[in-house]
Amino acid sequence: MTSLDDLPIRDDLRGLTPYGAPQLEVPVRLNVNENAYRVPEAVALDIVQEVARALPEANRYPDREFDALRASFAAYLGHGVAPEQIWAGNGSNEVLQHVLQAFGGPGRSLLSFTPTYSMYPLLARGVGMDWIGVPRGEGFTITPEAVRAAIEDHDPDVVFLCAPNNPTGTAIPLETVRAAAEAARGIVLVDEAYAEFAHDRSQTALSLLDEHPRLLVSRTMSKAFAFAGIRVGYLAAHPAVVDALRLVRLPYHLSAITQAAAVAALRHADEMLSRVDALRAQRDRIVDELAALGYEPYPSDANFVLVGGVADPRATFEALLARGILVRDVGLPGTLRITAGTEAETTALLEAMAALSGAGSAAE
Ligand SMILES: *Cc1c(COP(=O)(O)O)cnc(C)c1O
Image 1 (cartoon, rainbow, N blue to C red):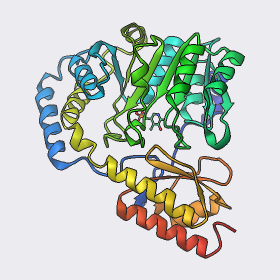
Image 2 (image 1 turned 180 degrees about the vertical axis):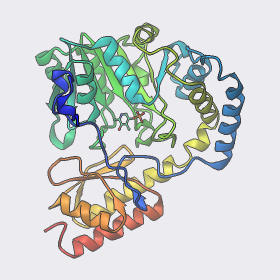
Image 3 (image 1 turned 90 degrees about the horizontal axis):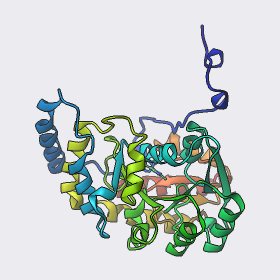
Image 4 (image 1 turned 60 degrees about the vertical axis):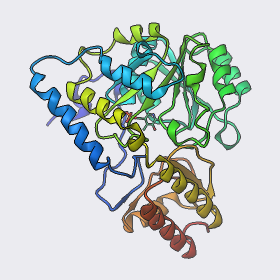
């Protein structure tokens, strides 16, 4: 019997644990920030037809340059973004990996502001680069001054700013993004996975792309577009950045089925996004009602809320799970992260939290 420890695995991978949020079949799943709503049926049918058109040509490799998809993303993003500024991958995690493969690697460093997305250190390690986590300020905010100081102190090759930030929900003001782009000698990537859920959607780093050729803005169809199962992420940047990413992608990395599905879904952007406002309302409702119960939810511009003031996160997690509700313990003391669900799911969550705090097990 061979175990992982017996294999000639890379030294820097020994002892690590893979990304692994639990995938449990429970009625109310509020743990990985998925869109609670299914793909609308009319849209699903159009996607199926587009995929059906692509299938007979599946004997050929797909369009390596995914031209139709790039045009669709550029049109969706607006802000004057052109198709040659678009890159895409099988989820934005793959896009982030491409960025680190092209601009990071051994001997180089990635800096981000903690707590933040747990994949950043894993992606950095995967390409053999160092990861530098700089703690955020009061209420998980980051100021232009703090960003400038961190970049001057550590001189990173790549900076990832998660805006709105996972797992805290915190927005990043555009002045802070601008400060990072000005201070860094390397690449600055703004991970806007949750941009569509922001209170003020005009605050996107897309508006800064023209000023900064080393600024990259990544997005995903997984959250607002209710497309997590298809795996499509993308970024916008200077066309020269896109040229760099071509050097590291695997040939034909986006399948013909993925391209067809994404192009069809983007034709229905309004419908795909139609539930975002409902989810934003449930997100705000979680903040308001949990605050009224005595918890300390952090302000959120994403589709989830980091809830502080949880006396025993493990116990609350288990008590919710016993009621068929799955949330996320991200390991921040005294907190749980809860994704906004449908109105009914959110009601179930809030009723359970009220029952738990009434029983004295939450805020004691
Ligand atoms: C969910 C998420 C992503 C998107 O992941 P995909 O690979 O596109 O599904 C990227 N960044 C952050 C911060 C996320 O939370």
